[in-house]
Amino acid sequence: MSQIPSNLRQIESLVEIIARLRGPQGCPWDKEQTHESLTQYAIEETHELVEALEEPASPHKDQKIKEELGDVLFQVILHSRLAEERGAFTFDDVIASISEKLIRRHPHVFAGVEVADSAEVIRNWEQIKNQEKSAQGTPSPYALNVPPLPALQRAYKIGKRTEKMNFDWEDAEGVMVKVEEEFAELREALEEGSDAEVEHELGDVLFSLAQLGRHLEMEPEQVLRRANQRFEGRFSKMIEIAQSEGRNWGELSLDEKEGFWQKAKAALKGKTSIS
Image (cartoon, rainbow, N blue to C red):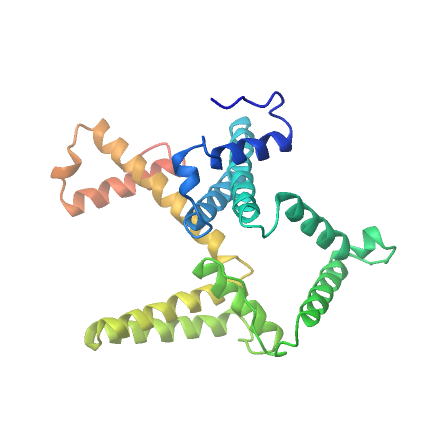
């Protein structure tokens, strides 16, 4: 049995715990993991952190943020441990890498460069990033270089990049016209097209909606997360109301379910009466 580190508040203790989990007498599950098998957990833990960050302020929110930050940190150190085992880099190297990057990209803090406002900070940040990329090679000035993000968020980022290249709609109304055009093409594909054509047109609709969000200065990934939360809340409330009225959900008609859905929406809006 492995000895528990004496001070669990130190980062070194967590590094040691994860090393033991991967060690000969460690956890069978942890020892089986690879960078590839852990990918889904990196995504899930990051999304759970974002969900906690967006909760209304409360002591419960603070507790949840603390826990989710720990889960994300576990992923970082576990990946670092995998890399160390094959001689690639260590967790100390990860710390040094981000520390050096932060110092390099904040010359107004660490190198005496003066800036007028946060907008200038962002411009300098982008310029330094471009210089770093140039040192690694000479990419095309028209390359989008969009990072591998969730699809909706990546669509938004693609639009941000093309906006800088002056390939964009003039305003939100222009994007609305495009959205309506894509919806019409989707309807046509649903009526006459193959599954591949429907998938193609549905993708175009989603991409166009992401660009509409950008023009409205609303990040679509965040907008959709909040819509998901609203739906989940209404769905739970709908079931609760149906049960309070002694109704069996499985025996309700679709029209009756819609009625309970409207009651749930009204209840969650804080209305005093439910019609």
